[in-house]
Amino acid sequence: MHTLPSCKELAMADENVTKNETTTETTAQETREATQAPKPAAPKPHAPSPAAFAKKAAPAARRVAAPAAATYTETQVKQAESFGHVDENGTVFVKDGDGEREVGQFPDVSKEEALALYARRFLDLKAKLDALAARLKSSTIKSREIDETMKMLAEETESPAVVGDLAALKAQYEELKTKAEAKKAELAEARKAAVAAAVAGRTAIVEKAEALAAGLGDNTNWRSTADKFRTLFDEWQAHQRNNVRIDKKDADELWKRFSAARTTFNQARRKWAQARDNERNQAKAAKEAIIAEANEIKNSTAWGETSRQFNELMDRWKKAGRAGRNEDDALWARFREAADTFFNARQADREQISADEKENLAKKEELLKKAEALVPVADEKAAKQARQALAAIQDEWDQIGYVPREDMRRIEGRLDEVDKQIKSVEEAAWKQSDPEADARKSSFEEQLNAQLAELDAKIAAETDPAKKAKLEAEKATKEQWLNAVK
Image (cartoon, rainbow, N blue to C red):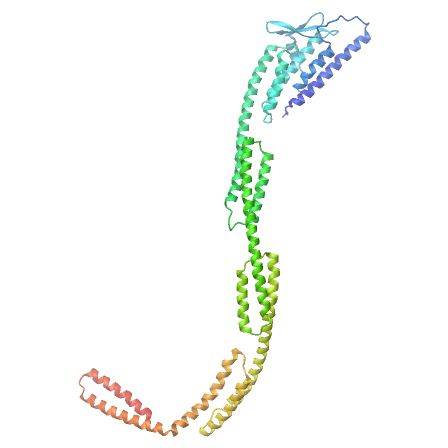
C-alpha cells in the first residue's frame, strides 16, 4: 500500500523537479553555445527565457506539486503535445477553447523538446489534481488543507502555462471541487459527531463530580472523596488532550459546573475539618481533666471505692471522643500510667492477702484434724469433753483469719460436721433426762388413746362404707403416732 504524499511534500518534490529541469536546460544551452559560434540573439520581449520561466513557475509549483520524481509514458506526453504547437521562433501555443494562446517560449532547442517540456508541465498539473483526488479519500485530511489546496489549484488551473487538454483539466478541477465540498461536509459531520461525543464525555465527568458533591454528609469519607475528585480532574485533563476541541461556550459552562462541584467539596471539607478540630480540642480538654482526677486518686488504698472511680473515669474517657491519633496516644499513655499505679498497687495487695489466706488455710486444716479426731463420741460424758475441746479449737479458728474464698465453704463445712455429731449426742441425752418432755409425752399418749376410743365408736356406728373407710384411715394414722411416742 502506497501512502499518499501531503501537499507540502508534493510542493517540495515539484520544486526539486523544477530546479532539475532548469539546470538541465541551462546546461544544454551552455554546451551548445560552447560548441557553436556565437550568434546575435533576437530580442523577444514577449516571451520569457527558460530560466525566467522556471523561476516564474516555481512559486505556483511550490503550492501544489505532483508526486516526487514523476515519470510519464511517451504516449501520455504525445497525447498532451497534440493540444499545442511551436512556431519557428520557439514560441509555444496551446489550444484553449475555440482558439489558442501563447504559453511561453523555449528558444535554441528543437520544437520537439520545447513542446515536450510544456506537455510534461501539463501532466505535472494533472498529477496534482489526481493527488488531491486520492488525498480526499484519506481519513486524515482536514478541511483547512482542502481549502488551501483547492485555492492553489484554482490559481494554477485558471490560465496554466502548459500544453495539454485544458478543457479536460478544467472539467477535472470542477469535479474535484465538488468532491472537495462533499468531503468537507463529511468532515464537518464527523467533527460535529466528535464534538457531541466530546461534550457527552466531559459532561459525564461533570455529573460524577456533581454526584459526589451532592452526596456529602456526616458519613462522608473525606480522604477517599478527595482522591475521587483528583481522579476526575485527571480524567478532565486527559479528555482535553485526547479529544476534539469543543466550543468555548460549552467548555466554559462544563468547567464552571465541574469547578463548582469541587468548590462545594472543598468548602464542606474545610467546614468538617474545622468542626473536627473543635471536637478534638474539646476531647483533649476533657481527657486532660480525667487525667488530673486519675492522678489525684492513683495512690489511694480504698480499693473498692477507688476501683469504682476509675471505672467511671474510663466511661467518661470513652464518651469524650477523639483528640487526634497522636494526641490520643499521648493522652492515653498518661491516663494508663495513673491507672496502672493504682491497679498495680491493688494487685500487689491482693497477692499479699492471697498469700496470707493460703497460710491461714494451712493453719485451719491442722485444726480440722484435731477437731475431727474428737468424734465420734459414745455417751454424754464423752460429748461434754469433746464440746470443751471443740470450743477451744473454734476460738483459735476465729483468731486465724480469712482463707481463700474457694476453700472457705469446704473447711467450714467439715468443722460444722464435727459440731453436729457432738450436738446429736448432747440432744439425745437431754431428751432422756428432761421431765417436761416426759410429761408432754404422757399427756400426748392419753390424748391419742381417747381419740382412738372415739374413732372405734364412730366406726362401729357408721353404715356408709366410704365414711367408714375414711374413719379407719384416720384411726391407723393415730395408732402410728401412739407407737412412735411409746
